[in-house]
Length: 206
Image (cartoon, rainbow, N blue to C red):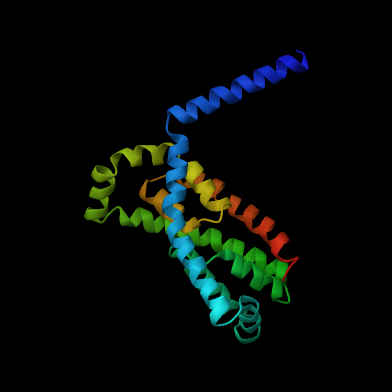
């Protein structure tokens, strides 16, 4: 097969996939999920910016955290944050890891704790389904969105794992949707990829 024919074939496959995702509502589902996740993230970023400019700059706070807090205290706080909504940007903890005596080890630990925090959120979502009001809201009020989320749940988890969006929220939703835990475990490993990439970048400037 010639190169031109191969390019045409690849283009045809891409266009067909694009049309499929558009017709099935995949794009709108992803965009809607991202839009709903952004407000709390922006609120936290705004609070951190206010603290940075009017209370204490972030680098100084990181220095104090390294000097005053034991590593296990910071790591425990990070795990709780990653389990409950994950509203504190992990980048702050990556920067903290870069300031410690063992940056690579602490980077691995926060990546692992983020993964475990998401796992905890997943099971909290499964437990939440036993609350009648939540079960009714999902099955009746959110029936249409529920169908889409169950269909594209893996993408939702991947977006939460890779992008600067709360991973615990996507994991909590996955648990509520009874998304296959085996696939959550596999897709959730992308969290380590994100921390490796961000760590390589942030360690250059802290």
